[in-house]
Every structure is written in structure tokens, then in C-alpha cells.
Image (cartoon, rainbow, N blue to C red; front, top):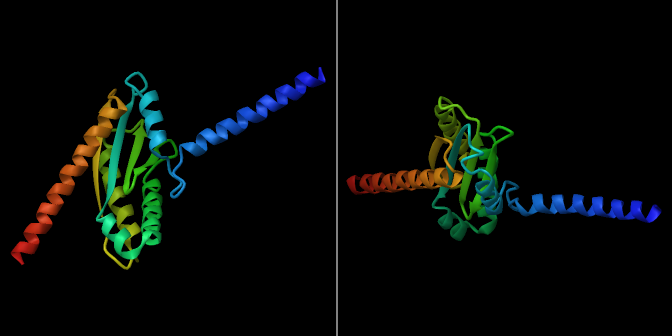
Length: 183
């Protein structure tokens, strides 16, 4: 009887450690937000049958991050990534996920969001990201794309948000180059 209790205790301990390790493997060690593995997990679990409520995905990219990282060093780049992650978390509710997809690209996955909340999220993103860039000894910009849908697979929303972000980024670069030429 005592041996059985010992084995049960050991099994519970291993199960607890396994859950903790699983959570740790889905977190970005630098920023503390979710990582690509968490995103993949959500995409597997959040197929059309799980997204019966309106879902939203925002993809956010730091503009010219490579230049900052290369010229000011990786420590400064890391500092900027942490500030960006904190800013994005401040735009979210406790049920939402902020994910660092890799490099300087983040995603926000929201469920149970009302279509009219989209304007509020856009305003919050602009404000929080502006705040994150305040006090830095260099200029930094952010590009983002948002996709929202009812019953869409998360992967489709991710693709749509990613395309929207790159369209904005391309327009922004075109606009900046026109400004330089005109000056």
C-alpha cells in the first residue's frame, strides 16, 4: 500500500513538472510572451470548430529593427523587443495571447471580440506602441495588420493579418521615399 502511494506521488510530481515544462516551452525567454510553438499549438487547437465566436489577429513588426540591432548592439535590440512586448500586452485582455513569432515580429490572438472593438484596438495599438518608443535615443516605427472573422481558421486570419501588415509597410516605405524625393 505504501509503495502504491509513493508511485502515485511520483507520478503526480512528474505530471506537474511536465505541465510546467510544457508552459515554459511555449514562452519566449527574452520577452516572456508566447512563442511560435504556442502559436502552432493554438492553430492546431483553434480550427473552425473552436472559433464559433469572433476572433481577431494582429501582426506587428518593428520597422528597421535590424538597423537598430546592428548599429546599437543586441542588448539595445533586446531592450526594444521587451518594451514592444510589454506594450502589446497592455492592449490585451487576460484571455488574449501575445506571441513573439520570431525576430521582431509579434502577433496578438484575440477571441470573443466584438466587431465594434476593432477601432478601439487600433487606437490602443497606436498609443501603446508610441509610448514604447518614447525616451529611446533613436526613432522606431511599427507596422501592423489586423484580420477579424467569425469561424475562420486561425491560420487564415494569420495570413490575412500578415498580408495587411506588409501592404501597410510597403505603402509606408513608398510614402517615405516620395517624401525624400520631394524634399
